[in-house]
Amino acid sequence: MNAEAERAFENAGGSIGASIAALAAECDMVITSLPSARAYESVFLGAEGLIENAHDDVLLMDTSTVAPENNETVEGAAKKREVLFLQAPVSGGVVGAENRTLTFMCGGPKVAFDTATPVMDVLGANLFHVDERIISGTMTKLINNLLIGFYTAGVSEALTLAKKQNMDLDALFDVMNVSYGQSRIYERNYKTFIANNDYNPGFTLSLLRKDLNFVKETMTREGLHLPITDALIDVYEEAEDAGLGDRDMAVLYERVGDQDISFQSVKESSK
Image (tube, rainbow, N blue to C red; front, side, top):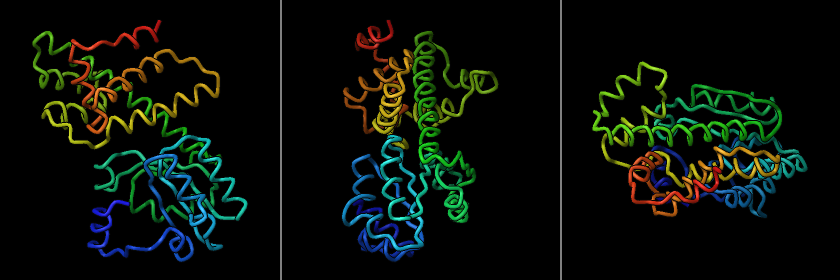
């Protein structure tokens, strides 16, 4: 429970204090965004949870990023009770939420997507029904975040090289921004965080690592060998273990730039 968020919601005109069971019993639509698989399954599957207490016409829509098998477990429970359920991870970060430009990547019944569309239209600018498989939105989000992990690491290493050569990083950005080296993550990480030496999080390194671990679990389940991804996950694991997990993911630049650290495990995993 986030008391500060509840107060902000109340100040904006919302009603607070209802239990999870009451929300499911009284609301036409319940949207959740949860920080972990444990919280996800507790909110949806507990005795006082959303599915057990849902009324016949409620739509449950979740925007969390969890493992695909978590989606399938909740979907199975929802189908048993004939509850409409949509898995709809989002991309766009805090800025996207504030500006209502989020991207929704939805998996599940088309009827659920159509029902949720008027609400998603208020919250976001890019609405995608990937397909009817409940895991399809989550897999799209995990692929998105895998690319974010690569881009963030690439920016960190490229700027470390540039700094070592005493290059003007602002001038370098101007060149890259009109070249094939341009990316939205480069712009985000450099302009908002690295250039200002301020890593107050928009998206924490630990959250990115969590999503990359879901990617790794999927790789294992599918029997995939993706050596660059394995090495990438080791880099984020070491950065989080070094105490950087609660800072923005762009802080990886500081970690890479510290040439006194050892990336031995990364070197070994990439052999």
